[in-house]
Length: 96
Image (cartoon, rainbow, N blue to C red; front, side, top):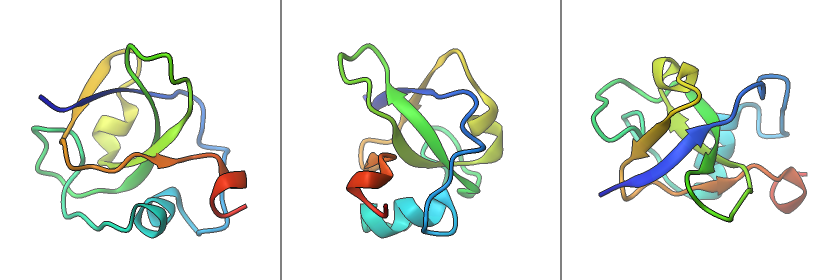
């Protein structure tokens, strides 16, 4: 079925000590991937995108690997592959 998330707008000015948000995801998710996390996408992962779980009481921000096309999609739900790990974007809990 997949994990439903919504891409968070206006986060390009946020940064962390990992070099990039994609590197942050690799380090703390302990995963690598050759593909965007969107369930039907075959493009490579280009960015670590800030997302929130869709239809959840959890308002935390997470990082997932997306291609730039899916990272631009805002305001609608994206379905991610089941195996993707949602890594906390809260740097005080990770690399801060």
